[in-house]
Image (cartoon, rainbow, N blue to C red):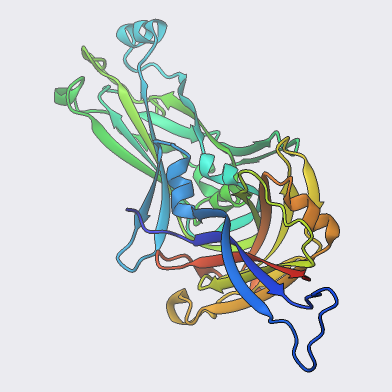
Amino acid sequence: MVHSIIVIRHRLIILLLICLGSCKLGDLEFDGVGPPVYEAQIAVAMAEANYSLTDLILGVRDSSLTINEAVNGLLTLTYRDSAEFKFSSSQLSTLISNPSAQFDINLQNQTIPMTFFDEFESGLVEFEEPKITYSFFNTYGVPLGLSFDVFSARDDQRNETFELKRLDGEITGNTNIIEAAPAEDIGVNPARTNVFVTHENSNLPDLFSFLPLSFVNNLVATVNPNNETITGNVLGNDAGITITTQIDLPLKAVVDSLVTIIDFNMNEGLSFGEADSVTLRIVTFNSTPLDGHMIMEFYNFDSLKIYDVPQSLAFTSATVGARQKTIDPEVFIDDIPLDSTGVRALANTAYINAFISMNSFKLDTRDIVSFFSQYELDITVTAIVQIEEEF
């Protein structure tokens, strides 16, 4: 099993406190003796769900995404994709007649879905050291001069917003040479060229900070960029270019107002009849470097919101110590009483949405925090119901 980035476990349990007291026994009177008082606690399962970002990553069913764990437990999101390029018939004719010809080609135009970020409603994640590695395996006998028109985008149809950020910086101003295969290897053994895009030669952190849903590789190249004199057959029988793209996002970042939604399935709803009071008790165990707050909403079986829990709750980050690791977990207990409208709403509630907004430790100074496999955010939600009966 892959280790978790953050584990958020949710348990909703009804703790039924029944106080049987103040009994009326007709006209019978007992001097100094009252009816017996019965107390009982009955735990009735209301809903239960387990949630983790590791499960979330695996749950997106994206074959291009993997999660890797370093020796020290630091986690990295990795996207991989590949494409093939072959010259068109007209381009082949040009190279056959003039192997030294110079012209432009569209080497790759491919979109990589970044479905992991779709799990978050809004916010920023400022990765410290994102990296893209482009590997070119060229079995043609001509070199190429690579240029970038690369961008990331978030087309959020739910919120009717669209945002785009384009790659910029030193890497886009340089001509990156893709080496030609040697004459004896044309069409057989490729020449490999790696091109690295990092935070040091580009604005790459900006391309991932706003939770993009897609990353677009539009790679343009110039054949024979240095206008060299080339002779002989540069094509070979099965020559081509394979392009692999690897995006590495080590989970060292600043997290700013990152919002995710979790839901609790209530199945048939739950009615407490003449309950005197219902209180939601939320216990949070946090060993992550994240502060946050949570609000909860009740939804009916038609997915319509029927109640807003009147109070939000907050939790604070565990203290971050040496090597950006947290030291001691923080534990919080919050009691949120429901009014009569909330108690009645429970009977028609199909699920509860919890909106969690998170910030990283020392957000005001933009401190980088790291996410390790052993971190947990454990949230337990209990409804405490009190009912008094008279006999």
